Image (tube, rainbow, N blue to C red; front, side):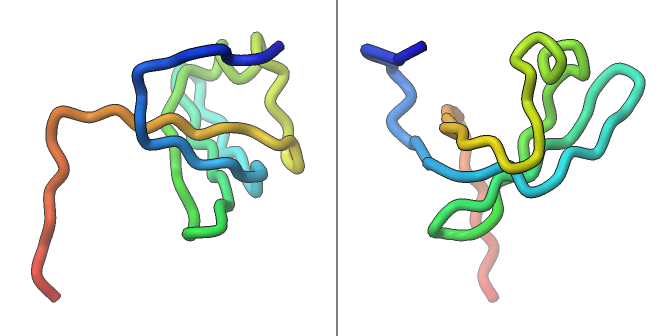
Length: 71
């Protein structure tokens, strides 16, 4: 499958490093060149997409709000 166009501008290529399964939703940790991106998606979607540790994925980030905290 290839993505020909998408409106999410923040795209990070990465590798799944960990999956923390829950009964309804699960966490997928993706290692990118910029660090770890964590996605919370339905457990059903993980099964439907056949996501597994080590798989190469594209993390798409689309948000209307990005919070910033001063360090």
